[in-house]
Image (cartoon, rainbow, N blue to C red; front, side):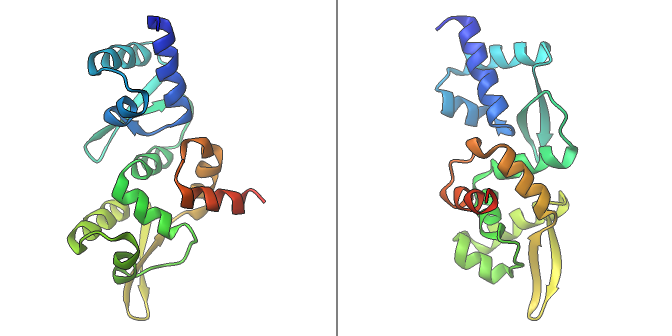
Length: 168
């Protein structure tokens, strides 16, 4: 593969899959570390892509107009645990931590950590339920719009089910 073809492949991937971090891109494209670093740096220098540091992770995005909250949503969707939490919550229903623990199957401290990050970033809101605290996606319409706009980048079965419902 020529250098230009490789760069085009990487740019194409970032355009279709905004919010991936370095290792995610590397795994998906099976590109050696040095080669990927080189091409990402060139794409950044040429203003084809931009980076955002979100929760200590550098995420790559196409250089187009996205709102700050959209950058943050993509970065959370690209994290395995947070993705699982958000998938469960895509129906818009508020859930207690105990309900989420049953559906997400992570430890309570892990769940608490990820919920806190998403509340802090404005992705989830904490609300009062009959039996304590609950969480729900703060702006479900924004989520819906992003997921529909970038549906090809979400291979996840549950997200695909919601896309088919929303597309109707």
